[in-house]
Length: 252
Image 1 (spheres, rainbow, N blue to C red):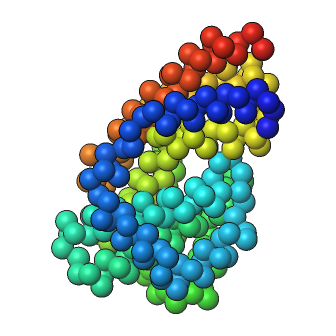
Image 2 (image 1 turned 90 degrees about the horizontal axis):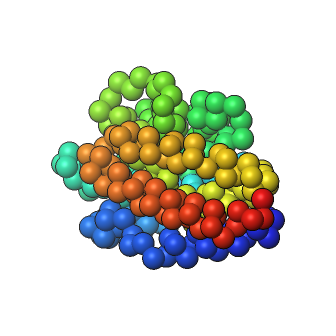
């Protein structure tokens, strides 16, 4: 990373640190901790996590760290939404495993064109050797296929399958909040290493894309708490842009 971006990243992370965590983490600590517990103790997840760590196409800020965050939040969303649907404890735990599998695999083909479709195809083949049923494989692959915003989605025929897909989508889009300016933007900069002038020119379009995510959340919980993630991200982004213009523009 060029020294200029290291300096801007430092300022960005200072801004992020001043903002409170999104309310989702304030109101659902028990569900978040339970999701983490399942993630750390499920043998299917342990095996899949080991595979993904060695094979994910880690670019554009969507590597292993991103995938684990998505898996954990998707699991928490499943616990919350499962309670609303009156799932049993055993059913909830199994659905958490399935959505966490989808979270770990959703960006496995990130560098490929149509990475969601390619990731779903790859996941179907990979999971042939895992102790998951054909219906569960379908749910994982449909969720991976459907995790991009503003793209046509695969049709899902079951309520449970839709919920798995929606939990993955919302957890992935939570990352467009503070995480975007803590890590994702700088991982992308590290990969592309653009001149600062190009970075600044493209900044408004990036902010516009971020704002559009606000209305796309899919679960009941995501619709209530997801927009705040985006609002925080936008506030951080606007403050950072002012700093770049005032303190770094002379370096263009």
